[in-house]
Image (cartoon, rainbow, N blue to C red; front, side):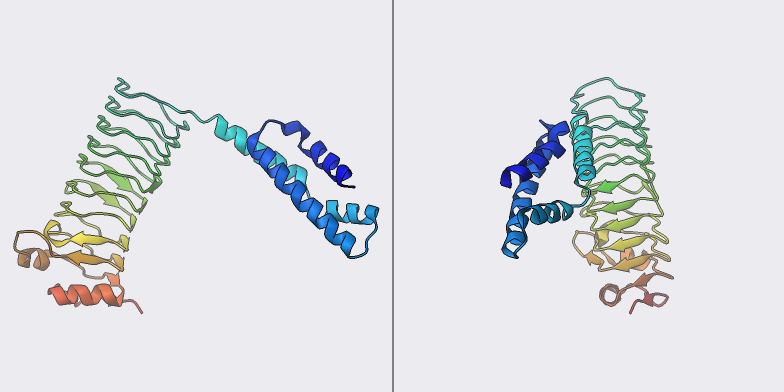
Length: 287
């Protein structure tokens, strides 16, 4: 009966021979079926009944196998691209899939990456001014030490994306959730943030002076107070947000210039700001 089960499984998987992920699924499935068959036998079922019940227990396995195979083929078709030190100004990359691609030290000014999946790609030290990344998946991408002036990241997927020490004058982040994004040591005074959610974002040693974060959300973020002069958080939501007092400049004027009118925040964030002497008279404390 073991041979009959093996023959059945081989038949289901025959169209996908050679697909590694499917082969692994096949081995796991056969092991599970043989174990299930023995359990039914131990319960007193005859061979044919135990076989039928074993097959019924796995449901529509053919559909599952097809889905796994299709996913594998899709991954195999993904482009692995090396475009380092290339002149690619105003290139059309809209909708492409390039995982772990390298675009380092390249000319990409005005290029269109709208809706592209660029997971794990590196643009380090490139000229990416005026490029469009609207709706692109930029998870684990490296945009450090480059010029992104006037680039567009509207509704892009930004997870662990690195913008450290880059030029972001006029760069637009609109309608974006930024998760564990790195802006360390970056001048963000003229960067545009609208309707954003910041989760675990790294702003250490960055200059945010004059920024307006009105109505935006911050969760698990730490700010350096010296880089916050004149920043507005009106109507913003802050949860588990911390403010570091490092730096060599006087903090008194910076603290006095912060605007939290209409903001909502948790009790710890509220207590921290109040302790620093920030005006929190118009803040709503979340329960």
